Length: 187
Image (cartoon, rainbow, N blue to C red; front, side):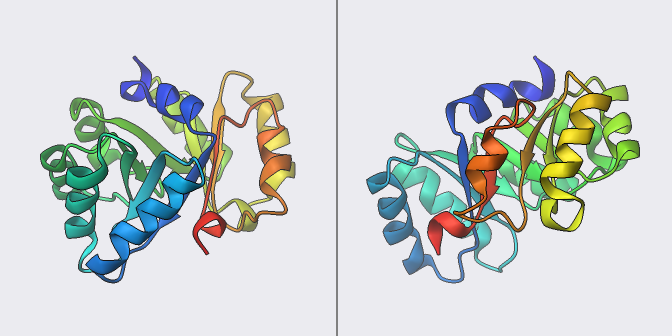
């Protein structure tokens, strides 16, 4: 049950829309737009003061139709809030040893962010095998993922950052990419 079964979620959702809500009245139209486009997953970032309220509203109104994830998770308080809100998955932009146990003990699927071989090796040492490659566009993109596939053949990535409607399929076609995250789906 690596990373509380994150691969089950990512295999089910090849495209993960990364959304930042600035107002609660944006939630319903956005979720309806995603559902109309047959997208049943969302990562809501913790980048605005209303983020937790937006997550709560999404879970309560649409939790039976869409897998709700919480993004930009960087501390134990946010993990506890994710538990309280009953989200399906958590996404962290990087590795932080201070929250490793909190992530594992949450019983919520999680994917930490990595960019370098050292970070990947740190995750592997924890027994993890699936990582957000972030920010993909700043750390070598497809070339880096290809190289990491040779170095770490059992690792799967969800690249995020700078991926567009014109480039996402090239990422998905790579054998070590399980899904792709981005905001182009909601622009």
